[in-house]
Length: 420
Ligand code: AMP
Ligand code: MG
Image (cartoon, rainbow, N blue to C red; front, side, top):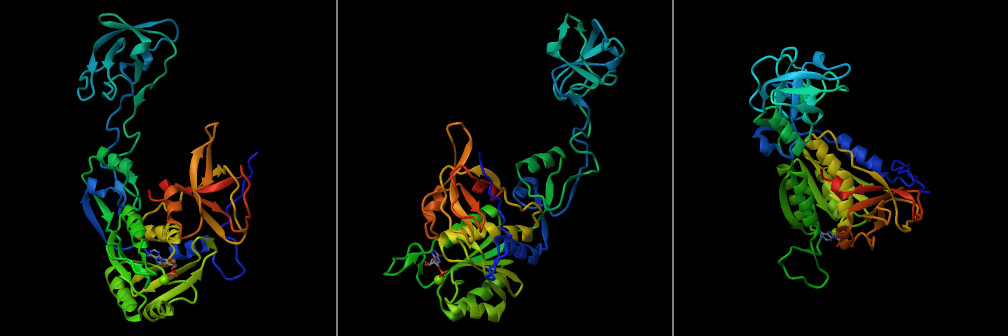
């Protein structure tokens, strides 16, 4: 039998560290939805946030119509026993309705989507009738209104079809098109500036000297922010030099709604990053009870929200998804920002030390019974970016949990559900 470990991400830590839930709530609560909206053509609204409720100008469907190919009849003509014979007086096609009225003893041939003719209120599937030249015979077992799609059944004229804050996806594009709406009012795009900090970092294209590494965080951040659909301001790599850091923060804050950096927020390290931030804004340096990720800086520089992610590449992705993403979504005016979490049994034993909430990198697969199972995606250290690439989900193990036995139900956050 599967055992289940609940995710209690709001456990209180006695060392002053914040739980994942506490940090996320503090960030989301302290950011504001940006002002400003624009009108764009419907298709350009894809992945944008509606800034106003959409009131439907029409009923959808706009008229009662048939759900089947068959015959439109009056329910009063349905036989209670035996059979009834009805005269076929015409046809109603999708786009070409029948323009008479169905009287007692009559029927109209009707196609899927075609308007129900006046007088009729019920559709009999063509497979359920016997047709002769000009008549049909129907038996018992039908009910009034069957196979009819009613006017306004999907959306009513004057009703709210979509609410402000809804992200426009493919279904919403189609729904708005079904209302005949050519333009939408969406929130303006969020502007996000980002840069990497660290003397050891080189941009790709430059040669690496001893002790240097390529800056990868700006690329993962570019990817995640682009998928989120914000306007990006890529400010490159900033060395650990007081004046350059100060300039970078000031410029970023003047250009963007939010500034995201990586590196330089660990304890005792690069003190002038903290010094600069203290001088320029209101910044909190948090230790979060999570792995990977622990250090995080959050606050404001002038009017911009500042999120300082840790430096290790996997920590950047984990903290971006858990904290920056919901906060940015809130700023963008999006309503549904809760991550998708499903419970899946783990395939093998998962190693864990009690203490912090783990966001292990996992891979979903099917066992020989066809059931979904999850396994770790190899090395779990926070500098192993290939583990992130092999993975398709986070396995979230609660702070107090130790090693997790094979078969235990664990919380899984699929990457596919993170950026929808
Ligand atoms: P820090 O938080 O600045 O102490 O960085 C922690 C670790 O992450 C160090 O090993 C850094 O070299 C590494 N690191 C920091 N920034 C980046 C980056 N942009 N790309 C790749 N690795 C980084
Ligand atoms: Mg550094």
